[in-house]
Image (cartoon, rainbow, N blue to C red):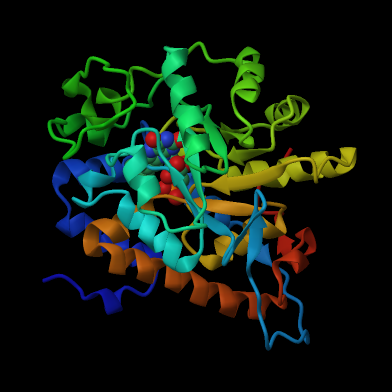
Length: 368
Ligand code: FNR
């Protein structure tokens, strides 16, 4: 029998339920990581190497953990990151995440490879609700330009270009489960030939342009006024280059461990990048985000202490949506808010602008 929703006490619980109730192919696509899944595991264990140095005797009767991301006020410093093929987990697809994000006043990043159409996802948002667009860059730049400009016209407030996927990683669980039915019509691929023998991810991704390079950045800046950020940056040199190119942010990410195995965790890279930015006085020139393995409010707090503006969360909301629909997503977000309030108190901070590097001990990470 399936546990009732009220028996899910943390984000991991949704995963355990989803594993039991989801179709095998869908579970394989959502849960898998690349190759030996070392990076996917490291995304979690890296957070376990960071410890707190809490302050005591601070008035924490009132705690406010709201913040801003790219100028948008949000209730809590996470956003729903882009994950493809929402209808694999739930027949309604990504619009469930839109409604959950609305209820909790957080931002949803819309994936290029959503199961619902882009317009359906924007239409599902309420007035004033902010969404961002995740972009896979098509070999056919006309298609990409149309997608970007349409997103801007429809009110998207940020463009996140995924830069860690010139070729899709080998997620062997996904490849083994013969992909036949996405439960949806994936759009935006430009009428690509679909090879269904290599798992869901590879079937839908061959339109992505592996020749994308830094030389293309000025073109993106010329076709849109949306803030542009790179999603999937993994080293300090590339963060500096993004700043020099005039970009507004980066997401330190390894794609949830689904691309390069043995990529380091985003949180560890963050701990390495921020001191370099501070040394140059560049820490306010760019907004830093991090994703991968965030499951607890303590993870969010650690990322903010180390200099992130916010974190992206992927699989937990997919699993909550697959197991319980909107009530699941709602509860997952509420659990994070409850954890956030308590842990802000316990670390001795009443606002997120008080979170700083002295509150964490990162000596367990291997930094260079
Ligand atoms: C992703 N991710 C992703 N990223 C992206 O830029 N475009 C995409 O289409 C997808 N699709 C996708 C599908 C699924 C099923 C997963 C799990 C992930 C990566 C995603 O945005 C993010 O980087 C990770 O999911 C973060 O890690 P966690 O929170 O899932 O551990």
